[in-house]
Length: 200
Length: 379
Image 1 (cartoon, rainbow over the protein chains, first blue to last red):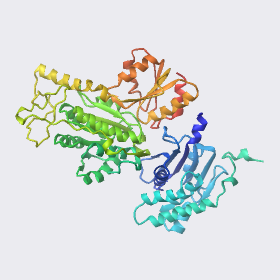
Image 2: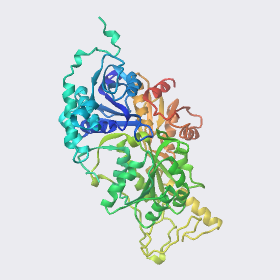
Image 3: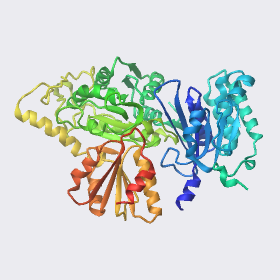
Image 4: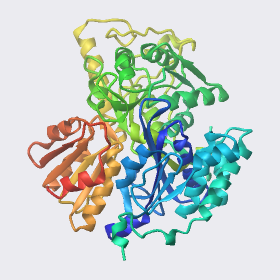
């Protein structure tokens, strides 16, 4: 097996934004669905500053069909950016044909036209009633668009992790995210994040 | 405690240490929370009471170390967990545990240092401190984990070594391993080997608490068992009373050293990858061993005969595994998240046989496979 094939075996996702947005929780739920329920190899890592809220926060999930040596992301297949700073900082870690998903209410300037912009936080506030569950709306979209997880298992893992009494709200948020993502056709996007390559 | 057997669990390294400790029979934890080790205390505060164990949050790490020594002396397997700054505070009592031969496990989840340092960043700066942090010649065992599964199995091993040899065992983790979540299947408890300390079988009047058996290890009575004995930090005779008699002092030190050196084959653990025909190899431990394994695999694919020796036991330094490879290979690379703390051990046993190259990263970032690969192909 050559290095490229081995890299293709890995699927790498980064959830990024600021501390307090629940990105680590989203990554943990994703990893649990893929690892415990789908039965694949998975490594979930994170890095964050010393602050409890604010500051940079990122969480990663590496998925593979074989044991994972290096646990962190090398080249991202999918980047979720829940604010402008994260989008700017991590955009260059994406593969050429990687998927960039942003919260369109919080990210205003797009680094590429190969982008999926969904107003996760606005959906959470206006439709679910709690801005707090924006992470779960985003998780739904990441779950569908990555194609790496069984969506029923994703919901199971979610219900396992969230505090009692919030199941309905979280599950509704996840489903809304999936629904929004279904409207997206990945084939309609430019093939590369360097969109110049796609010009006619 | 989590279900053992077939079920898969998504655990952090820190959570796996907790499961390992409980499986090994740990029933006492005293500690003080600190990033990146806090999850160990947090989870044990829930789990220990459920198995009739005791959890105490102490006022600081000095007291934490004191508390686990006391608990162990009364017959309970004990542990504490901390990071660099707390580990510094534990050194005085750690020396007491060495001299009084009190089995216990000290987990140090390494973060950037010195002092308060970089609380949320990975590092491997406490390696030599784990060996020599407390003063005086003393026996100690230092182990390092690199995966979540390791964090479970090596924790059990740490307790087993502590109980078998009556010594404190330092378990080094780091911010990367501690906070990485991976899926593990915990083995059935019947498959796990758990060692308990040997207790005296003689009548109380005949008990010599520090005489040592053929291995140099003495049976250990618990406080309250009726075996009256004296426990002190002063160098003591076989009855546990202070002595300055040169022969008794020397006997004490020699027995301390002997009980570990007789156990080398059991204590010194390493894992080898692609070593059989290697022309050059990497020595790595902790999270860095994972980056190194990937770099070695990439090098193999590119046609280079590279290998990896992963150290699980850092001290006593596993020279029996390292020396033959230094003779077999022309170069060795030692990547570390410090200025070169294990590379000096490799140099010490090398005796000029092999070209020793260090690769050090001290900017608070985890070493990537690419960096190691680039160094490796230059060898």
